Amino acid sequence: MQTVAPLWLWLVFVAFVLAALFVDFVVLKKQGAHEVGVREAVNWSILWIVLSFLFNGLLWWAIRDSTGSVALANEKSLEFLTGYLIEKSLAVDNIFVFLLIFSYFAVPPAYQKRVLMIGIVGAIVLRTIMILVGGWLLAQFHWILYLFGAFLIITGIKMWWAAGKEPDLDDNPALKLLRKLLPVSKTYDGEKFWTVENGTRIATPLLMVICLVGLTDVVFAVDSIPAIFAITSDPFIVLTSNVFAILGLRAMFFLLQAAASKFHLLNYGLALILVFIGSKMMLIDVFKIPVAVSLAVVIGILVITMLWSARTAAPVKSSSR
View (spheres, rainbow, N blue to C red):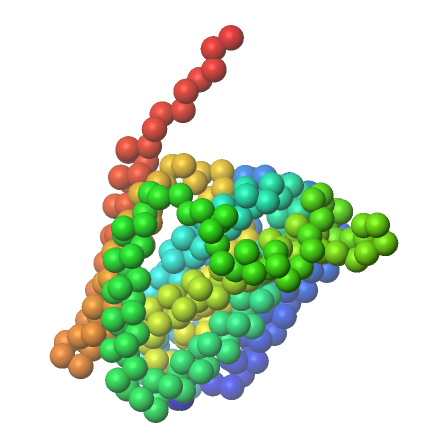
């Protein structure tokens, strides 16, 4: 697996991720359990987006400095931006499932932040492994791109047909398995994952939520990681665009939580994006769609879907006294 990123940029990236996790787990932990409001979510979302763009600028400068090619720096910077946007948009569907899980288990708003923090760490570790393995497989077996492409097209079609339908957690096989393996208390015990009832140590519902959030990310990573390999095969760009999208996931969750009903058609747009990216993969040896075109298509689909969602959203009924 070859990358144009110099070694020092890898070290900067690792240092940044560790610093971000330190802020999440140490600095923000001092705030204690609290409900994240819209204003706080907006501020954090803007911060993560700004940091992602600053890193992209650093990536552009590092490639231009190490290779002396402005054209290559522009190309790789555009690949990062496109990959970041794809991962960010596909994470929206992930967030809607998180909302369902939190609603099903009636997770108090004050505890949701910790669940997402732990879920983000698990997602970073998992996706790093999957990206490295996927990159190695693509380097050894080029034909796997066609499998990835076909998988994304099928997934997009299934997402289109499932859009607008409420998933049923009662029939979730993972949840059924967890309930068989773990005795679970009926009530929460603060932010604890384990509690003691009648002298026996058992799991709290919060542990079940953590497990389901982790399993959900595994499922969605199988969809999203092949999608970015359609944009670039550079492991550094694949990894960094993925991780930066994940780091802003917690803030985006609380932001979309307040506006979920306004984007009821978004899943249709995400389905179209998956089909487009899968088709791009299938055609890669026949016609290579430029990264700029891919970026324009993804942005266009998202903008049209969001505007159409806002236009067709059901009006909020005001309560009369």
